[in-house]
Image (cartoon, rainbow, N blue to C red; front, side):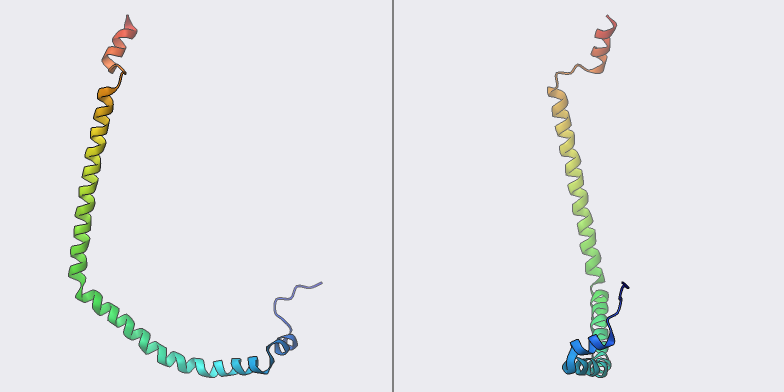
Length: 107
């Protein structure tokens, strides 16, 4: 038994029928015409995006700087909060400081 990668041409033509074959032939004629219409539209959209970016480059830079500033403030607050948590945990801890613990061991 052999493995078929492509269907037989007869089976393909029989399955498609007249309307399928006509569609394939029409698409081969229509698609080049469609690409001639779509390409200028796509190019115009890309050019519009580039112009929009160039006009708003300064505003984009300001937003980026503001975002970095906000992130730095949030990071500083987080470090401060973690420091307070560690200080309160160390103050309420019943574990002796290292200097007292070493004195107990040596006696």
